[in-house]
Each structure stands twice: as structure tokens, then as C-alpha cells.
Amino acid sequence: MAALGINLPVLVAQLVNFLILLAFLALVGYPVITKMLDKRAAKIKESMEQAEQLRQQTLQAEERMKAQLDAARQDGQRILAKAEQVGEQMKEEAKTAARREAEAILVRAQAEIKIERDQAIDELRQEVVDIAILAAEKVVHESLDKAAHLRLIDEVVKGSGGLKKG
Image (cartoon, rainbow, N blue to C red; front, side, top):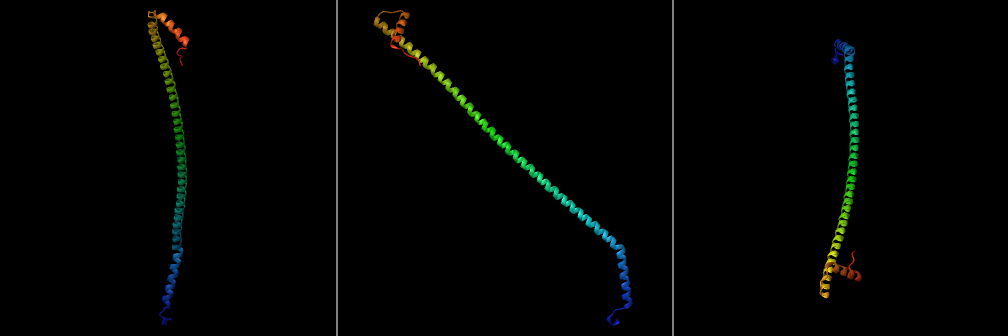
């Protein structure tokens, strides 16, 4: 072995040193390293669990938010529908009030027209009476008193059918 450059006592010494180091690492280093790796694995596992919990909480929060948005959207639609309904109702009430007011104006106008027509007929009668009195005075050439004239004109008007109201 000397020809190969291997020194047997040095090889045995290195082998013994290697075995001592291996035994020391197996007794002292391995449990420490294993414990450290286990702690690290536990931390990683705990972090993963926390991340999963946070993800679940985020998903739940998103679902709650979606539900609240849907509820708010539905409330908004209900409010809009009610506002449209109230608007239509107010529109109908305004139309009804306008119709009533127009009918009232029409009734008042008809009453005023009737009153004015009656007044015009009365004025026309009075003018006819006055004209008839003047004509009668000229025909008779004598002055009759007013009561006699009115009686005479009433008789003439009744006899001829007179002016009718209405």
C-alpha cells in the first residue's frame, strides 16, 4: 500500500477520528439538529395554518360583503320602485286635481254666462218696454201713467208670446 501512497497508521487514525466524530455528531449534534428542524417545521406548519385561516376569513369577509352589497342593491331597487310609484301617484293626484279645477272653472263660467244672458234679456225687455211705451204715446198722442203703460205692454207681450228666457 505504500506504493499507492497510503500510510496504514494514518489511515487507521483518520478512520478512528471519523468514527469518533460520527459518534459525537450522532449523540450530540443529531438531536439538536433534529430538534431545530422540528421547530422550524412546526413554525412553517403554524404559519401555513394561519395563512389558511386568514384565507378562509378573507373569503368569508368577501362573501359577507357580497351579501351586504346584494342587500343594499335590492334595497336601492325597492326604494327606486317606491319612488316611481309615489311619483306616479302624485302625477295622478295632480291630474285629478286639475280635472276638478277645470270642471269647477267650467261650472262657474256657465253660471256667469247664464247670469249675463239673463241680465241681457232683462235689459232687452226693459228696452222693448220703453220702446213700446214711446210707440204707444205717439199712437195714442196722450200720456198714460207708467202703471197703465206697463199693464198695456204686459198684455201685448203675453198676447204675442213675448220674449222667453232660456
